[in-house]
Image (cartoon, rainbow, N blue to C red; front, side, top):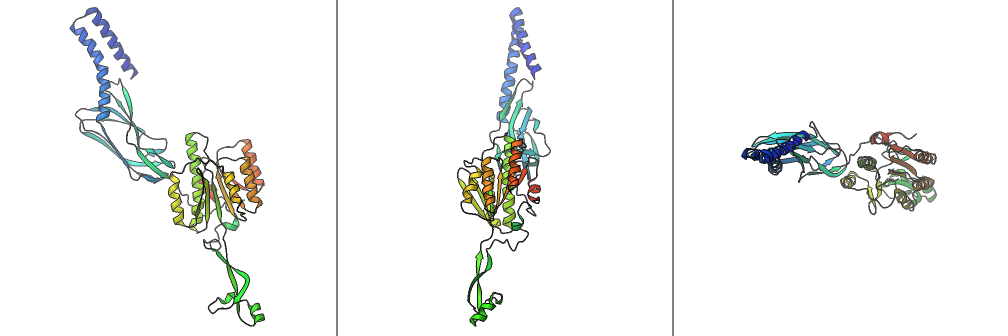
Length: 397
């Protein structure tokens, strides 16, 4: 294109010199022609952009990250002149289109159209545009190339993945759901020390025989409901200071880790609480698949703009006097405050598991991880290339 422009410029200069020296109708006609050619070429690019038709659609506007869906694309020439050199630029930073180049060029005769039926997948959680990004129109003589943004882009709402887990290896043995009876969602009944008069229909196993012998009548033990253990999940929603692509990877892994654990317990009807800050502190309690699905649908547009660090959320939860519970915190940043909050959790007899989603392997971070492990916390570092399911299924040593 540079050479074509240089030739055009030299032609204009040459014809102007020729006309100034020799004059005459032919020389001036040649000069005006050399001037009109680039003007006509420029107007042609504008005309093509205004007249060509573009249609695109996707199978569903709410999709799950990584799932392929149908994508159709049609570009047409409904005019009376030929459209040459129309390049279609597809968005490729957050989505992938199957079996096509990210830049495709078309030449269309009058009343001709090109259709493409393929599949597209979204690579990250969130709400963003997919499909065609811009149209680049070039004239016949390759003098001008103008890129126009597409006015009506396709926007997809992308839900995070739900990573299925057959076992949750990071959980301590006492609350690992290998014993579904002990960890049903209902409260557990246990025998009390108090007794009452036997009522016909009572389970005979509840009869307190020694007390019955002393009182010369049948008496039964009372039962009381023992609250079952709860799973406390903390999701660090503080803003991540990394490159845009890395930010999206880290955010997805934090959200998907918490979802995987909550879904694991929801399928076994075990209560879990998801605690996070998104402008204000929020707590979502999940004990069934229906409650999990309701929270899951909100995770597509959840944003990392917390004002309160996760260490503060842990401290506030500890004010309830939790003992013997399973704490899980998914975070992208380890700090001294987070370390101290973890010590407080462990000192109360709770189990602390930290999912550290980061590629940070600097010495200060390694020392902090080592200190937390020595204090009794289970720390798992999740790198960008790691699969969440592999980490969460890993047995605690």
